[in-house]
Image 1 (cartoon, rainbow, N blue to C red):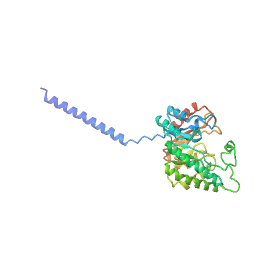
Image 2: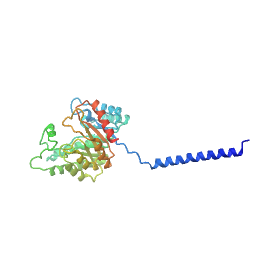
Image 3: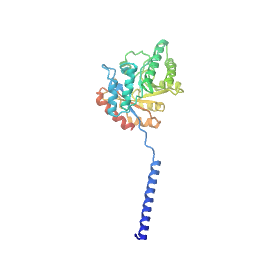
Image 4: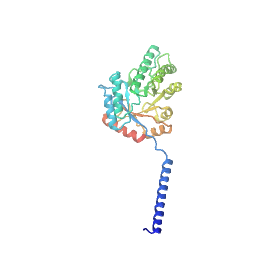
Amino acid sequence: MKDSSSSRRNWIKQTALAGVATLAGTQASTAASSAPAAASKIPISVSTYSYWHFRKPKYPIEQVIENAAKLGFDGVEILHRQMDNETVPYLNKLKKLAFVNGLSLPMLSIHQDFVSQIKEDRDKDIAHTKKCINLAAQMGIPAIRLNSGRWGTIPSFDDLMKVKGQEPPIEGYTEDDAIKWCIDSIGECLVEAERAGVVLALENHWGLTTKVEGLLKIYKALASNPWMGLNMDTGNFVGDPYSQIEQLAPYATIVQAKTYYGGGEWYTLDLDYPRIAGILKKHGFKGFVSLEMEGKEDPETAVPKSLEVLRKAFG
């Protein structure tokens, strides 16, 4: 038979240890619940354009999707002009390939031009945009990139790049005319976008939206519609980019991030991505950042380096 005093001491010791363990567990739980939540990760995609700069042959979108999965991207932005065709089997093939590789398809980047004094021309681009809205919906893509378009008074795109997208209006018309054409045209497209559940993300692309002021005039005139969005391209600014990024960041739905390894196709910018990430974070941006590698270096080496830069900046 055990000594009663010894048994009592053991019982007291075990009870004390249990109490300490319970207290420690409670303190750890309290500390965990009161600790600040980890910052949410900004998803990073790669545009198929990064592997193909409008030169023959086209770089297969299927290969971009497979590359993106191997490199650790979160998604792939599809350039419409890079697609092989628009058949349903092809669209479904891309959708499934992205899915089985664990990737999102955040945006379909398309081209259109609403800057024309001829209504029939604008109507053609409205019809094209509506068609692309439905292509995106078929692939499960939640947004398309919009262009405003441009005057076309500088026919060569290479020459347009030399003046950073700033071309004179057609004689007899003003920028206000062109902005109204864009607002009216995009307004028509928004009806289809709302029906299909696809965001229209207007980009600060060369042409009418080269200037932040012009872009915001169009965007704000349509922003009451929840399917109107804004795509901010970090490389499409004239002058200091950071002050202009600051102006657009509060409205950005998605961001395209340019890199220029090997020197840019038309120009080269030294962009401070930690600074850009800080501006976007300040304004509560949580959407996709989509890489557009626009340098002359082989994308097989330039794209991985670009991803590393963006991951370090955006987390």
